Image (cartoon, rainbow, N blue to C red):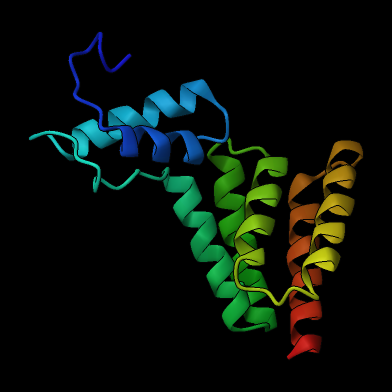
Length: 150
């Protein structure tokens, strides 16, 4: 695609895009286009791979619930989850991405339990009614586990 559009694509940037796109060709093309729009004067190997807005939003959500485990943070998390659902981000994608983001800062001993709960609530999303309840329940479960660990 880069050759057809006459975009000079360094190998290092192509590898970064390939790693970040999660084996999704459409997403890889969108990432390449975002990089090209961000750096109009030409792509270099140092050009950062652009994340989507919803991924940045979920990363912020993960940081919020990791810093403080209170009922107020849970309510704020619910609002963010609702915003994501309203913007057509599927609940299972939110849950999967959130679990990955949370695992980046977790102790190795907590990761299996967090992923087990993520799988449990993802299964419930498929069979449940209101998706927000299940994602919010996962966040509450994470907060309880993390607070107990601290």
